[in-house]
Length: 72
Picture 1 (cartoon, rainbow, N blue to C red):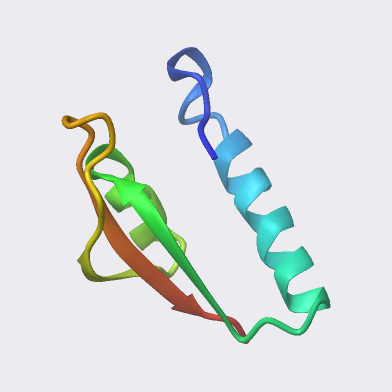
Picture 2: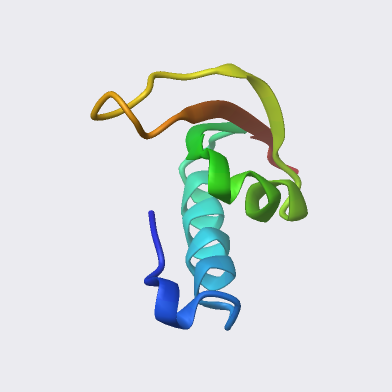
């Protein structure tokens, strides 16, 4: 998921993430694992995700890290 730079910080990403987490819970998921761009790590940490390791670099330049969150 991504939010356009021009509207970041206005709650759209948080709302999208909350909806995705709600759907995951509805389907019985106990944990979410994702790959986050370096510049999105703080966003996901704010929402309870923790870095669990490295992830693939996309297009030979877009570095990602693996993050996870246990759903309650």
